Length: 500
Image 1: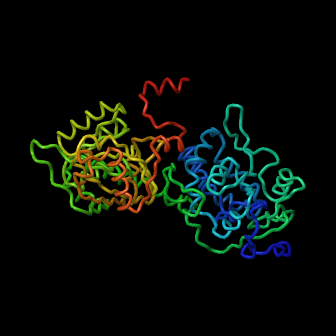
Image 2: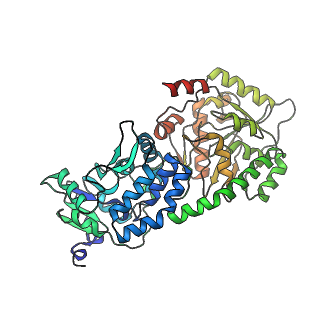
């Protein structure tokens, strides 16, 4: 008990005059509100591994927590590491750490610790977690200069063995040794921790403060150094043991419900499909006044909407109560086959795409998502200006969605499963807002450039939804999440690339 009393609570720590000093902070329970790293191991097991691996990890929780309380923290963490990482490619682990974990870390930052941590000129993280997991987030969003963490053992072929490199999991004395190796005699000015095993490294820092086990609201995500705009993964909520258990128990029910929601609506006329949505628990809210269908012999209206899920055009048709067509930058053959509306893939050849869009408008109403890809967060990507050159009958549509269990979008996963994951949620919610048709003076026919039209619609939709406009593109998203440029290659090219 005496050892615990040596360190004062972090509320006593001054943030004045720290810009030339160095801080070393623990992660779980210190910089993060949650004291458990289980959700992040679960995300790696599921996203880089498989559903079976994730289930094994969940089943192991009582056993591992018993080890943590009775034997040691180090053995418990080693067990989680082995189950989560053994046999996985390091490249896949790094991809999950970069594209999936930051969203969940960002929702769990401790406000008081962040205030102190952010006041220092040099910032170090000292954690028992594998370094590869936490490094992308703490460097990009918390401004950490370096991470001292547990190092995974990797084979020559680039696969994790499930074991860790010497000296082992960074707990207790190993944290102290890591600090001494890194800093030598010029030790950190401040050490921050939350548990007794942090006292070893905190005691050699010039100052040390403890983060007490008190409930607090996480730091708002907009207070971080940069926002999390792009992220991957199918799970919406941070998978604590209880949330993970409920998610897996819901899965078979969700699959059955999803199949019913997808296939019963394919054959139904759009007017009737809306009633079927209510019957099957799909919440659709329509605001504004949709334009009437085009008269015979007249071209259709071009609906311009932001892109939230693959089902945006389908739900728009249901909201209108009539058939429409859509063009998309990428759609799987299977999704195209089961789509209740006509879906045409763009070729990215400007003249050819323009001709296709004009032909579809001659047939009737058409919906386009000029962002070129979905965005889960309240941001709008840059709008392609091609559509503005092709018609002056433009109606913006603001689309918002709510998914409570599963995300219905993916970059690295199977895209043909996207509509099923949307409808696997207990009550998928869509809000469709029809805005007024653009007046002639705001179209290209009225003297505006295509870029001015596209940027104006982006601003109008952002204002309606309460979102933020960005200049980011599909290429930026795919580069951040998958390390590619977002181009859709043919199956033949894909096979050749895999061979290489």
